[in-house]
Length: 285
Image (cartoon, rainbow, N blue to C red):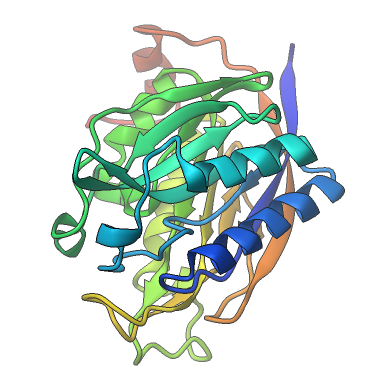
């Protein structure tokens, strides 16, 4: 086949710290609405159950699979859509900032644990232990979480692309400090957001894949980043590196954005990637 056509919804939902029931309810509603919009996939934010960097995670996190992932799996099955979502995982007394890929049949296809943790995260979450892709009817799908996609951490995205990922989907929690004036400078143009634009467009251009990050919205009311605001501004980049869509911006800017992408078939495998990337102007590392 020449290309794969996929519709993806960016489910930019509010994540209220420690309000697991409310957060999961908003997630299920986004899944339901994504299905009604004709989306094949819906991507939801990072740690949507408990909230990012929330110290309450120690008591609230659950195993995966477990009660929180089961809610998402039930919704995926009910509404017939792939779900990619960030959850807080408890395993053996340790906490992980994790993400799941769930099939339209409700199957847990892949679980990923965030690797590129900032110092504040390292006080709460364990470093992840694997990189991989989920196999779907459309092709292989890579999953990373937020700052895993920092320009200094793109080894992870390169690895997934070399595994054959046709797109990389990234549950995220993009935040700005209390003093940040969104009226003066949009997030994706500012010192934080332009890193994502650089990483996403670079990887999408090099491998002709889609790269999509979905951030939560809301106030960070606990933890080391208390007072910061999660501001959405979710970002979808298509093959070739073109920006296809953005979510609304601000701590109250819940949004659901449908993105249609056409991803060309890529025949390159294994050692052929070196020549392929050189032809795109890529120079090691």
